[in-house]
Image 1: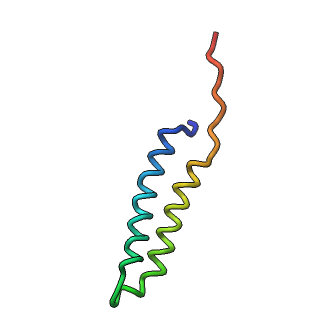
Image 2: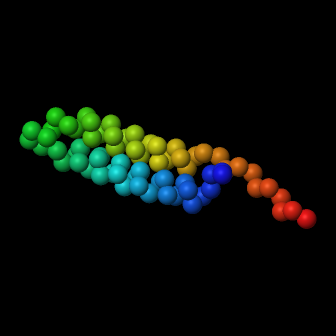
Length: 67
């Protein structure tokens, strides 16, 4: 089973949404929850980076159709 564009999209969407949510949470943390800002920034960055890196994986070459 090889990689395909649909699988890449399925990986991209949740990682970007979750990463964006963690980064947004880090931007608006205040009070006692502000201690979690580095964790939220790290998780958001890792998730967004993983989603974008998944798009860079090369797709396998297409096999010619059988005769």
